[in-house]
Length: 290
Image (tube, rainbow, N blue to C red; front, side, top):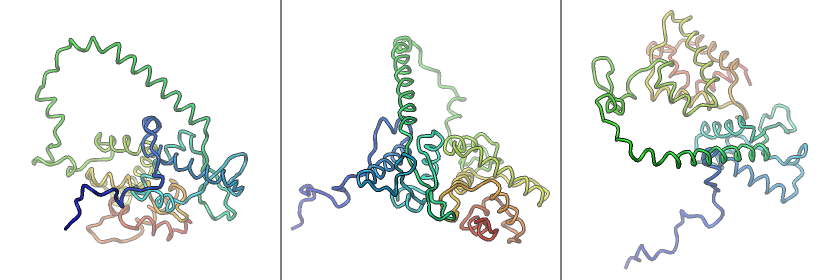
């Protein structure tokens, strides 16, 4: 007779060892992904510090090092672009600091340490701001109770719908095509790729200018889903040693190389094709950029 499933005392999918740590306060301030990465860095720093492993002690700080392949082994549920964005976000806040203590100059694997003072300052400031906001909401609460409900108009309902006109037909907004400057595209760029927005913009502007120069016409508009793929790809190019972001001048050289190739007519050197598969990676190596 089958054992009653409700009598099970455990599951192979629930770990008995220490899982990844998620601090709710830290996640609310820095972002969920950033807080998980930072906690993992702290975990390994403490491990080397406990062992007094001097190979990880430089210039008065404890460090860890990792390639993005190794980071993905730590976080298999994330793409490399997600990991890059989380690390870049912490670097921009100067909470995560990086250096290179590799013995071989060609090895660009990044070393990471934590600026604890900057972390505390950032969190303290955010905590004070949140407390002030909460007090403001509390004192304003009574005045809102007597306010009438907003009228529902045809304008407000139309703004919430996902259906819009593409040409002469109704269609999902994700199947419509948009220019790079369209509000819908910029919303994705700013909300999901904020730390890379300037770099991505420069790359795409160079590409479109090159397209116009070679083809004598504007690049065709692109669907929202393809814009999302393009942004993902531009922040996750597989460089040798995979330890840094693609530089603007490297991208421009790759684009120049790309337009020197003859592709099938239907491909037409579209940006979607450039960022597909391993094309950018192959151009990087073929251009002797590594």
